[in-house]
Image (cartoon, rainbow, N blue to C red; front, side, top):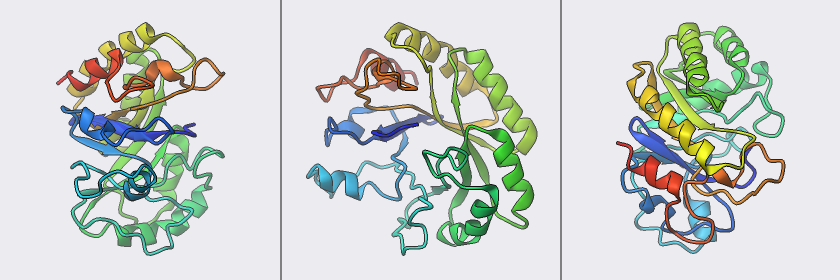
Length: 250
């Protein structure tokens, strides 16, 4: 669902995904002055920063690592300072982690080892049935919070989906990807964002949320989400109209 993303910057405490793409600037994370956490689908931002020759001494605080099932058996250097660890990204999608429930269950004990001393978040899914089966089959597994993705253009439909997740799992919810799909309209994205953010902040069962995405460069190419959702301008290190609203919401 996201071939060229760099970073998510999130909310509640507000966050965004910092997505990698050729237009990435080393200052992208720092530009979000009022965002409190971020992630990039990786266990660290090192590769992204090295590829763009960014200074490595001042990685922005609030980074949340994520486990990639394709290399989770390696000795990943998960920072001891990380408070949280995110599980696999979209195992229910063949273009992402692409795992059966049984495969994910078989890996989870190793994930738990990497999460020692941290709050462990479930695999992030769009299909709540996949996650329900995972929680049912993963006997004696530690899953502290759950992560979901939701692409809607109606804030009340979004909240109904999240309430369904809460009713099923009764664990704090991370909405780690959300935006309005199938539109090229910045105004429609902004309308949805203005409707959704207050509801997300008010919902006691939503622990964190993260817009999709910081920087996106696809324009009306039949993509699920296009550049209308980008929080940054395409060819500069400046926030877009959407990014200004998101960054200054809280």
